[in-house]
Length: 473
View 1: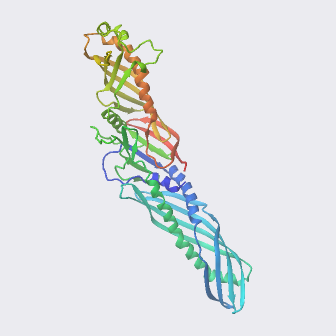
View 2: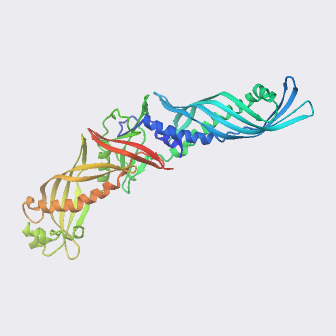
């Protein structure tokens, strides 16, 4: 698991568009702190790969004279990053700092002096007060996806000490005067390149960002940026397009996104605002794709229902149907005449839909004979929730209005069909709609990301998802 998967959440696509956002995402300081925890584990593994080459040389050490020395087999035995912080530089980017870090090393030493005297042993090296500060930059790659790089890096070591096992005390003088600087230089030359390498490891994970997320066989939803991220001292706000499109046929809806702002909340790591525009672009897309039409036959009605889709049942309310088409099964075509309209008000989600119901008698040769067309207006309430990294929901019927659009069997009282149409809606249409809504549509995500401690609030013009984040791999 990598820090950079978390930081990837902070670095969606740089914007080149200026349209209003359909979806907004906010990363809070709590989210940054979660990233910091993963950052430390990642950098710890990176820094453990530091290599200190064998050191050798010759120096004059008073009163001994010229001493030839070598340090070999230097290995890291312990490394700690006890103090760290990740923050935001308003209008600029992300800062990562580490302080009071330490490195413990073990190796072998050997000296020769006075031409013939040789000595050897082992040593333990203690590097304390290691500090690292880095800035993380962001640009767009050739595919339009985000790419991160190290914008700045600095490191320092406050002290280094050695404990020689065997040998005389003048060895410490040799270390303090000559070898200390060589080891410091060797370590400091590697630290920032390793930090940069760690940052570059995020880029393969950034390519998993679902900028164009497939929903099903009908639709995709686009999460590209529409303007640059807004970085403050406490959060980063992202404006995403949040628009549905038909697969293979990109068509803009006859409406545009309105401006909206996320409330100043910070108790969760992540906040996602989904606007009415996003929901209505879904309705527009599915309606254009013909996915909101449904043929209903008698085998779709529960066996326990006393109402059947045949001319005998309908003939009880419209006698001329039974006379003209005796003992025949029927089929209903439910079809939207325009895309449904979805509105968000405080704690209320309402869906208004206008459609037609065309009734057919099924002739013995399977020919469909039209009986009548009803104009139907329905209002639904919706309950929305998050499952995994998808936004799901269910609907329930508020009210229904019907008028007669056309009759092929003569005049009749439309109200007489209220119970039948309500039954069809409640037993067939709504369960099918709910089955689809429960599958959900994907929210912006990368990699193996899970949303936990999630709460959904419906506010005016948008719904707000407050959530924490976990990565599983």
